[in-house]
Image 1 (cartoon, each protein chain N blue to C red):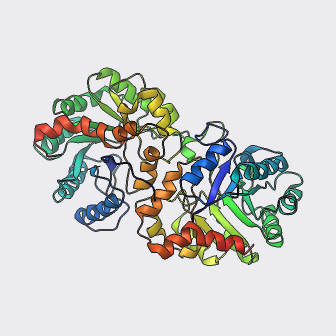
Image 2: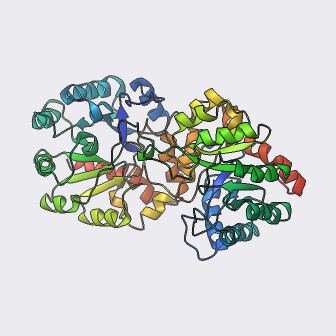
Image 3: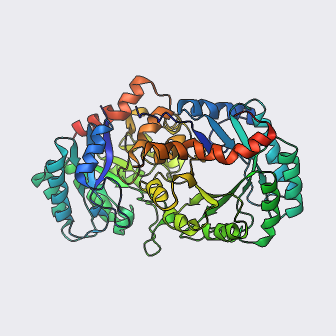
Length: 257
Length: 267
């Protein structure tokens, strides 16, 4: 059983990707042993009509997923009616997970609106995914250079919202070690491995954070799916830790919501 | 579990970072544990530590000594390239004599101290080529701006046009691989090293389409990178199995065969 908590539907704006067609994406996930995938949408990064993006995400999950894809809603609190978008995610679509792109949407985590969003997410029982980056900053399109999300304010905000459930995605390469440990200690913040680098990356990061907050994420189809799968082979983890990362932790997180 | 292709894997691009260890012997031993897990057969190491972007001759000699020491117990699996600084041409030529002509190393690594478009680099290229040594040139194309002395794939294309008979490796494919591939495309003596960048899907497919599989070399850039993320670029690519075999090991083996044979190294 493998739950991939970081998958994207639709198209990356700057390049066609292999498997960016939903049928191909699902086929690749299935043949690679993925049994559940939390699927957001690349459209959530730049589109303004997120209600439409979220509807398409749900429809694609239903049409192509056959139970494999769990839809993740995109929310941009800098847009009008974002609270209604959140309500629709929960009430109309039954979503349990939302995905944020603070750097692409133009706000920092110390913006009061993010605190407000976090409060609403707790009320509505959402897991909140925060994407810290989408691409290596060195290879961004020259007209669209976007800095990685600064997580400095997150610890204090999480302490103000003790029931919040946050999953950092695309964060492990740029997140400093002290920040990683600080956020891990809150107990409310989890991480996934798609951008975790260095030899034996998974076994080494588990010297810093508890296994219960580390989840399997691939960032497929932007990254080759094999990258995250191979990381689990490169590290010596044992059955208990492997199972927790591959699916147990994600299932527990989702079941709590 | 991912099915690892039944191919010989030669890793072009390895460093001694990412693991604990006071000595280079301790570090390479740990790195080999990870290499074993990922079925990597042969590894090429260059540069010691701490890293120096513009090393004086004493410093690059010291780092090359670290590499030579590391190979001592791993001659059946590891190769080494000499780290040179083209700001010191005479001393770099002497280092080629010491490490390649009269020592165990089999190629050179040029990093970021001088752009390879400069003609002053030519003597280093000529001497290495005479010895059949492999030539690896780091390249990047950073949208935020390269170091002033950091080479781009366009710089390497200029070097390649001055040395059309010498095989050259475009390290990192310039990082921004969509541009890097096209920049060196018309220089058949240039191969690309695919290591040391994110495992972005489509990279290797484009490279095979534009360059052919024969001009693509797997490398990881461990220990800052993982074997996993870099092998995934090949394992996960939508290309024929035969192309994967070439990229994972056969191409590098072919490129290194002349110097390995001339030095009597078993492989």
